[in-house]
Amino acid sequence: MDVLLPIARQQKAQAMTERLEGTFRLNLQPHHAIWMLLIFVFTVGAAQAQAPRELISPIDALVKWMPFILWGQEGTLNGFALNLMISFFAMLFGTIAGVTLGLMQISLLLPVRKGSWFVTQFFRNSPWLVLLFTIMLLFPFEIELGNMIIPVPDWMKAVIGFALPVMANISEVVRGAVRSLPTGQWESAESLAFSRRQTLWMIILPQCFKRMIPPWINWYCILAMATPLASIMGVEESVSYTAQAMNAEGDRPELLPVFYLFLLLIFFVYTYPIARWSIRLEKKFVVKT
Amino acid sequence: MASPGKKANGWTPKQPMVSIKDLHKSFGDLEVLKGVSLEVMKGECICIIGPSGSGKSTLIRCVNALNDIQKGSIKVEGLEVNDPNLDKLELRKKVGMVFQQYNLFPHKTAIENIMMAPITVLKQDKDEVAKHAKSLVRKVRLEGKEDSYPGELSGGQQQRVAIARALAMNPDVMLFDEVTAALDPETVKEVLVTIQELAEEGMTCILVTHEMGFAKEVADHIYFTDRGVIVEHGPPKTFFKKAKDPRTKEFLSQIL
Ligand SMILES: Nc1ncnc2c1ncn2[C@@H]1O[C@H](COP(=O)(O)OP(=O)(O)OP(=O)(O)O)[C@@H](O)[C@H]1O
Ligand SMILES: [Mg+2]
Image (cartoon, rainbow over all chains, first blue to last red; front, top):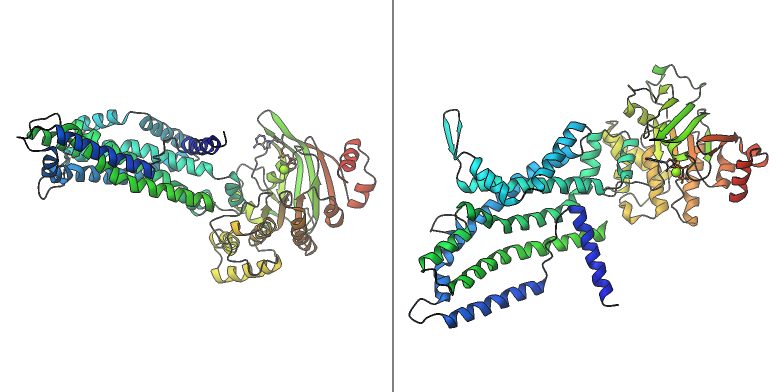
């Protein structure tokens, strides 16, 4: 019992933050990294042992195709590099739109508040894949601006498709952070004759900023790990390229676990430090306030 | 302390600074204030006492329009609070308020807390404000704590910063809502002394308090509220000795 109590308490605390932010926490721990590595090494070893001698070995095949999976052909940014690019831009647009939407959710004007609430809930509760499909299929492949024609490549459509759910979730992060402040802050600002706008920008938002950073990073990690969804729509990112690489090697079954575990490993290596950093920040902020 | 431009409402110092007439206030179906009237002259200090839930906080929060009113009238220096076209900012520049929970801005230092409103709201000159803030810090005896954040100050110190912050706006009336209720007994005194000095300097004060000793000594007039009405009121001498209403008597016997 005595051993279980701290764990129960910890899980309760985590459930509390999750309820506040409406998301699950990427609670990556050091032992996850060790497990990840062990599984990878073990799988590669097993595949290596099983592979027929006359064909290229799984390790050699992986090494050969690694640059292709990581960034595609020489001088292009496809493969995993495209996953990163999609995640950066989707996060950028999603954050800008999400903060705006979140501020609209605390507007004093009822139509603005209701409208932005509806938009937020709509995109927050739609499956990411459905949003992605819709955008990829509905969005034109080029946009006419006067006599200029701007092509819209598939990966750019994917950026928009991912930015929408990110926007909705960031909107909730903003609203949640503002609501988590005690009402006394609003009241004392009001009693000092601050206008609503001044109160928001000088008193409320600066205090919210810190609280918003950890969930914001958390959402970035979730987004980065979701970007392979774009492969279903033929975007030339790492999962598409892994499939292509294996295809070029004749789709040998023993390559499958090696290649896909390698993919998992790159995503893990990328998100693990970010998730750890977010956990550290959160602890620091909790101690301070 | 008075600033110009206040005669516009035809108010003169001979009239009550705050005058509340037949005030009614409800939260939904719950009527919290059922016709409250009282007057406070310039330089007076009044205390409102009464059991928990009797509407003391609600009453005092109506004075600076933190709560809206259903019926009745509140005039602050001639400015009608229950006027749909009321300029709330204009009203709040005249009325300072201190809360039970201090409500300091935790991301600003003590001196920044004090200087913020005069600079952004009143658009006063920064150097002037800094000078004024320094004198206020001295007044509430917090020299040396200017650059501390609220989290680094004791409850009593935070509350004195909150008082200085409200004073920095040069208000004509100060509202105090149970400002010592969250403090430990030793620090209560330092805050009460600050308020007493203010009252003696002629600041118009409306206090909600449970500190009967303080009320007895400092108040010019005491109001006892119960269930949304003023049951009894009078200057401290007669109020404490000659309370007539049974509810007042019972309350006083419990608390004294
Ligand atoms: N925002 C609100 N919404 C609904 N009811 C409220 C609100 N604020 C206060 N009340 C109710 O109004 C009544 C009076 O509350 P008020 O805070 O004015 O009492 P009080 O005399 O200050 O009590 P205390 O001594 O405990 O501070 C209470 O019954 C309370 O529940
Ligand atoms: Mg109260």
